[in-house]
Length: 240
Length: 285
Image (cartoon, rainbow over all chains, first blue to last red; front, side, top):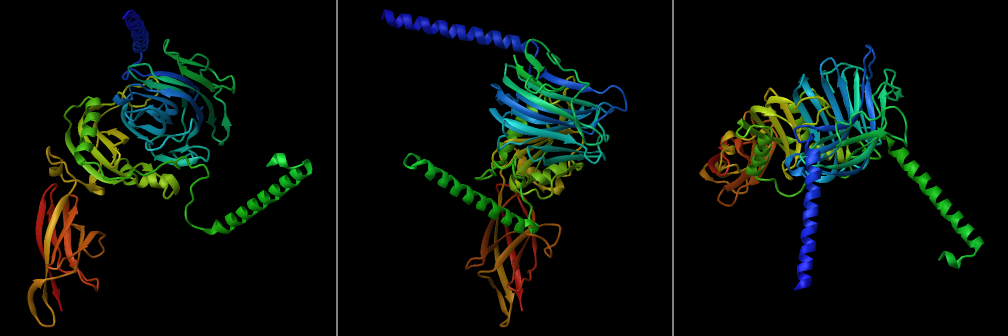
């Protein structure tokens, strides 16, 4: 009887400790990051001196850990790249995602973009039904410089999606990293190697980007230079 | 096995394996070169869609698709969307319908081909939507719009795509589910055509009589039978009767003679969960 009571006491303490630790974590995360207030760890290159612009962005994304406990309510975590057009505010993005009402932990590639006017309109496709590899490559480029922006995916540069006539031939804002939208703390950790596609088609580091520590929106999101591949724009990021 | 070989034996074995390997590579390259004239698209070597398996099994009930759509509408701030419409098509057709500015690989082959050919439902809804869970760049507000289109896999129920805009896509380009099929309590995908085919005329100038083992074909209404794609067909029984289960909509129905000629066509309206009765007649010379 005494041993039973002792066991129940230990169990109760464990449950209490677990509840407290979970509560603390969620309160900290929920303080500034929710499904409606997305949090980011990103490297961003906003080109400031016209006509500085590029005809594409490339990101090699490696996702080491990902888990979205509240996946059922539409919460998600992305590891991705955005190509943005400052003149219209439009953007195109591609990367890996988990959550989205589909699954906590399965990685899916996705593409998304704004529609034709600032802050309004949106289109996304998530490649459900099969999972992406932990390391994946995404290219968003207007290779012919004719306002036909295409997304290519994976080792072989597989063309998956093009959007014509909506955006200028050149983009002037590149961004890559984590986007997290969840009311409870998700798990995510990985890295990126990025390149800007110049007008002659050559690849270059993001020399003008804001790198180290940029994107720490609070204690929730972390980012550092990618020490394994230390070039401007490359980064390691995680949800702290 | 290796422990039983002396040093010289191991060298000979490795040499032999190398020769076999090189020969294998050479043969493969010759085969590849000779196959180079094939016009068929080949998937990339590292096809990221390779793991895609089209969902099998029956199509989900329309009611289940609508439940998924309404759940997403609630999440986008609209518990009771208006002007809900549903159409079905391949993912490729739907993607082009909802955004004509999108272009897709024409025949990519492999898993991507299967993915683009998968059957999806497009649910279009009106309301004041805000997609808080849209994937947007840092610093951007949640997108808003008055028309939310959801692309849902017909077999698995997974949400494949979302489009938030201001204009309704031209659902007539797809297989439009009649509005009455979406009402509460119906929401079923199919109706039944029950009919009987009679033959008249012929060498002995017979009167009307049941036409046994005749082919009955169904095509979409509005286009005429000539040149139309036959959606489905069946054969009549001994008393000339036939039954066809098909999605709701308007169809042309006709008997078909062995010569390929169609008998006089009848237009029928099929309602979800209901049966429609019709009588067809074939004039025989």
